[in-house]
Length: 540
Ligand code: NG1
Ligand code: ZN
Image (tube, rainbow, N blue to C red; front, top):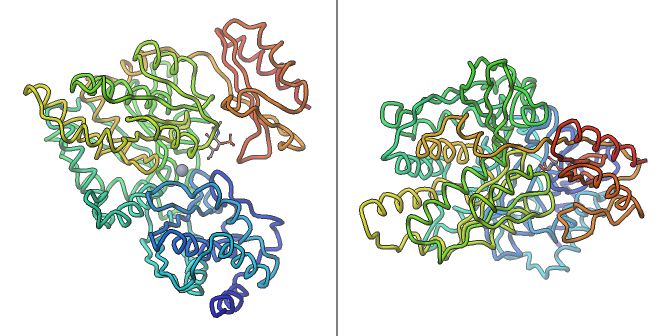
């Protein structure tokens, strides 16, 4: 057909790089050196169009980013109509469509998707896209556009945005004619919605200390500065926000010794840190979909407030509000984590907060889906990616309630504001940041008070490079905490772990690196080190 000819003619301008054998659409979409991604972008243009046609012309998003990776890397992810990650079934089609060895194979892969999903090529297709601040982004957009043009897709470029902003826009676009649109379809619409919600949430409280945000020298910096224009002033709400690591014009410093991933994995303050003891800091990652908090105690001793801490803080706050608004009988609140969550945080959720706790395999899509099964589902990865989902039932209940007292009205307003403040599509550093700040103001917590809500169990995350990580398979339903293969290894691990008081240790193949990860917890840090080392020695 006509489109097939156009694809074949256009794809020759975006040949496969000789350096890459095979591209694989993984948990982070495609991600590699920016120089090697033109062909992938072209293919993603094709697939985004197909996905939109399959879904009756609903708008699909394409985000070009490599998140916390170095500046020369880049990547791409597709966003489904409600702002969720691409449906799992289609991930393998993404892999297929970008791995054609020549134009004929690309056209053939395109045809296979059409057949498989019975797609009508005359139907409309709509795609929107954005990119982070990486230098290769502008060129990669051209390759994406070529794929879109070849297949007659209607598209719109939203320029430079954070990943969660693009997710917001996809959902806003697809709900704009609904009874409850998600928000205005513009970058300003994002700031307006979140800014208004934060103003309401802070109406009766005041922050008492400033906060500093390390933006990893990425897109979070200009976007947070824009967000601040829509927030109540320091005079109004007491909150002073300092923005640091905002050198987006200097590509080479992106994520360099700073940002959420650096702070979490290195367990230290970022480049540019000049805080005094107990000053409140937080870090975004390179595309602003992750956030972690931290501070120094005198010493200085570094103290991290990671995704587990944010999850427990949010769950405690929302749980209180739900109780005060008399929704406890009606709305079930749950906290979803991965097995990497510190055991003390999960125990705090079930025993202190008396809320449900659940574990899923690693990867945001698993957490997101599990959280969607609660009325109010809080999910966070320890690395700082997470959000809170409100079901339709929860939203209806919260917004239709007639308050029974002025005090209840106040709580109800804060809870309503929370539903607007929190990005429902994906973990969002800007939105999570403002949520945490509002909660700290309500609870009148300093970072010290926040961190003393529970004591982390001593823990260690190690990794071991192995020849074939695909040999490490876990038993389904165990949140990846039990190995099925290699045969016998799990028994050996169990025998070892049983020697330690309150020991917990598991091994799984990384989905993003050629290695297996070993995570351990025990009563003392000496025990943890010993246990994790011994388990590592069992591998290979
Ligand atoms: P893998 O490499 O599969 O462990 C890592 C992180 C995940 C998630 C993904 C995607 C850990 C232990 N794992 O996954 O939390 O963020 O990368 O970026 O932190
Ligand atoms: Zn990210």
